[in-house]
Image 1 (cartoon, rainbow, N blue to C red):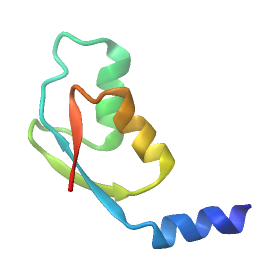
Image 2 (image 1 turned 60 degrees about the vertical axis):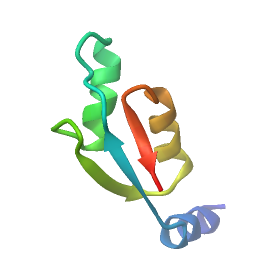
Image 3 (image 1 turned 45 degrees about the vertical axis):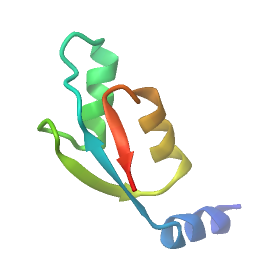
Amino acid sequence: MAEENKDQVIGGGKIRIQYYRSATGYSKEQKEIVRSVGFTKLNQVVERPDTPATRGVVAKVPHLIRIIE
């Protein structure tokens, strides 16, 4: 099973994620999630591996960050 996960990360591609709404007024946990993805500024775009874990993080705060196609 470890081999399957390796292939998924290598061949799975990347997704671009944008931080488009401020985390001010939201819980500390949600602010930490935004920081853990790598955002430091509003409207910043980062590129991350397209894995279920990354998609799960985005799903936790869909009102603050979004996937750009």
